[in-house]
Image 1 (cartoon, rainbow, N blue to C red):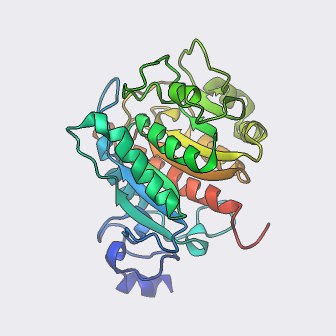
Image 2: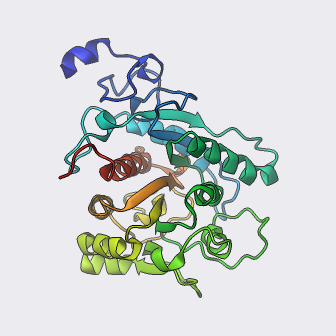
Length: 323
């Protein structure tokens, strides 16, 4: 069946009719959308809206993540032929997923960006869809968390990152990707006691009550145990997962703005995400993919896999059957 479909499927980003199901369009051709989902601004009956936020004006080092959503979409074209490995179910077959396109904003009015993005996220959530976001730098998570907290109340956050992003910053008008977690805690958007950071390997003077599992601990105790600890910390609370691609070691993700050695491998990250199955995920993002510093698109490929895992993780507790 897949071979026959491959002969006829093209430009599934526009031509596909059913919002569910795998796609067999040639990976090297056709219009690019995330996982060959249909581009749509109509969220009627949509379970998950994947959206891009091409913003990188909050970085402390090198820019380029504005090209992240485009690169992740292209890299994702390798994946929609089969269900994601190891999950035991087909999230693309069970759930209606669309590519909602990118958030629109005026790049020259940076001060207006946070409210614009928050409204973009709120519109998706108000339609009853979950939102998986392709960044963009890590500042984008703050406006998105605001929209989610308005709907769900204070969230548990699982943050994969080399940096805590808890730099002290009580000027809440500043737009800085290194302070989003500090502001999220101070604004009451998240519950620090049931939130956890994984992969940290830079100094932080005060974690503000957020649990921290550094990269060395991941290497020492292994990814299965790390996932167990994450599930224990988060419990059954509404949870948001934000994955900064620099959580991965630069050997696995060189295309990022602030790389730090000693990070997780792609294999470790994949196991942790899979073993987190059962958490009450309400949304998530993958950020800081910077194609200008990538090699062979390996960082974008990693980002695309993370986004697929987030979809599978969201769907795990909403499937029509139980294991």
